[in-house]
Amino acid sequence: MTSRLSPAQQTVSSALSAELTARAWDTPPALYAIGVQGSHCQLLHIPVPATTWALMNPADVLAAMAADIAMFGARPGATARPGFYGVAFRFEAWDLPWGLLHGPARHQAQADLAAGRLHARPDRLEARYFLGTGRDGTSYEARQYRWQDRVRSSVYLPGREAPQSPVHDALRLMTAAAAGASRDDPGAEP
Image (cartoon, rainbow, N blue to C red; front, side, top):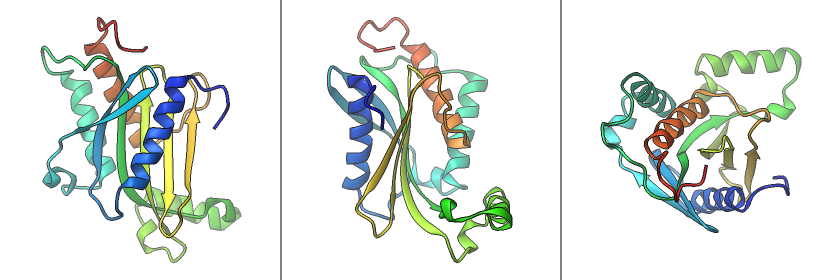
């Protein structure tokens, strides 16, 4: 994490990491609205039925929800709460030791990732993530591997290379839709 973060960016990054470690492993995915007022960050759970997450890969469910928002827009009359900052998503997934994979092994790993076969790889790592996006274009990632206490946190500032994935894209779309619903909110930080 860079030292040039705003107070809001610092508090969001810390809140995502703290919430990730406060949860037990093997919990269902969860969607949150991020609220920031002053130096306080609140993660507000957005109820999504457990059966919805069970329909398909949670990242695909999130992408479908974002696509619905893009197609149909926010609910008529929907407004974000004062202090609305962004949207975050907590989930568990398989990862790989990418730094150790080179040449043909890395190409095979990328093919396995694209085909959804990471679960079958012997070098897979179980990880849990808390990804978020802010109205200002900042992207957040908190990641923890099972059997490790350390949480790795990253903040990607606006105008820099932002992470690309279906989850990040869906969160950006949801954040933009909710921010559009709260444009006239003087308490919301841009």
